Length: 367
Image (cartoon, rainbow, N blue to C red; front, side, top):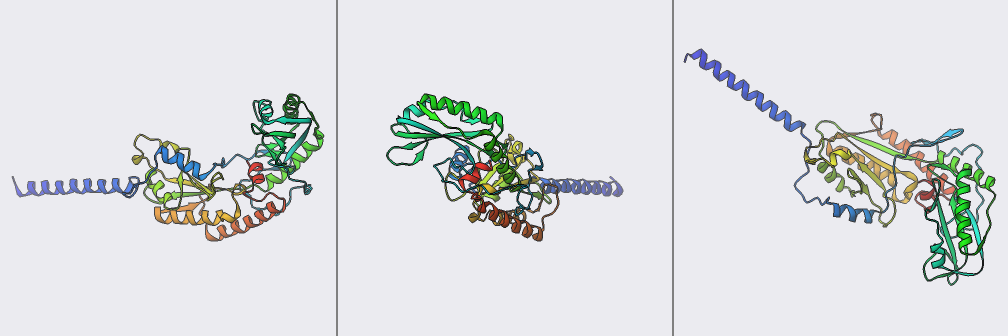
């Protein structure tokens, strides 16, 4: 073999080795990042446990509904502006779970006492009128408190209520009529006399409450996008777990729970469900994830927006990503500050209407 042939062979080998090395490095660089070697318990049993500990998950990013004369905002930050024609709802006596601030309440008077067992047997099969929840409460003979009927207890009166508004819109005439039918059937079954509020007045009140809720609703979302290498589901879960997030009920969803069981989570974190359900999740490539905050569902004392900002910044730093809005625009510090200031005004406005964020009434209204 001549020197020239040998030189060409060596050169060809070197080129081939360089190509293989380049492809190997590129493949490794572009491969989804994997979690560190640590025991990250994200089994179904752990998901069930964390879900019970973290409380109820509200549905986030609900599509805003249309109401004549205005649109629901997502998110809009002018919370200090009252809805057109809005007038304060008169403060009334709070009675049990039902509340005249957000419910139509129809009292049921009795000649004597009714058992909780009889009331439960008389309950309607579905506790909704259209899209609005229906609830029944009894006045406990011994405690003097309104409560859902309990077996073995006796009640001197009942009240049937339907919610005036929620995120599906205001109570309308058809839903009110369905409520009347269900309430009357219950009253007849317990031998009670039912008194209904005027339908047109209640429907008008429902529209006013819905206008207020539409103008003061906010569901915030940040998008964390990978700058270079994609992320595997395990890598996302590991980094989120370090910030206190736990597995949610839905694959590809994690939540930051409150300290009190049974309450909605403070924040939600979600990524591609298909990536989480892949046969080999380690090979799934995730290039973005979402952080979400349902503002009216979380008490302001939890400082949810501050924690959302900190979680986004930490994840972006640790995972080599950037924080943007849903349109891909970078969210800068001054933008975050402006959103935070508007949220404080929103909190104040909700509190002025006895609908403080995170309160039972607010969680019901904004659901």
